[in-house]
Length: 153
Image (cartoon, rainbow, N blue to C red; front, side, top):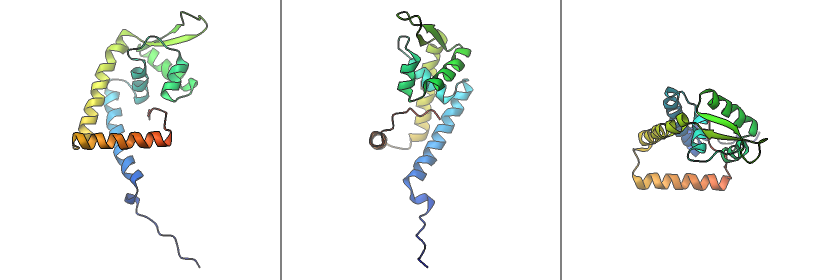
């Protein structure tokens, strides 16, 4: 009978530590957004539209790495909350565009401040150099893995 393969400890994996940090950071941020009546996916879309002229949903889908159907559902929720509007494209009446409402535009800086606060809380234990190193390493992994979709979960 062959000897069993060694079984590594759960905590011996970088993925374990990344997931632990990610789960805590993401949950805390989602809780902060929920107080403002917004989900993480909605925040990502609001931020994607912020400071831009009206853009087609297909472009938002490409930027966010989501399907057009998912963008439509997300847009519908934000329209119901009066944070974005869907209009006919001025150049092509058959096409549609998405844009922030004044209420949506005024909400984005408040939500961005929550994101900044969340980062400060979780990564404040690191020096600026350590944060820069961590960010650089994570960006390198994202690039190497071809991870284009924005994190919305």
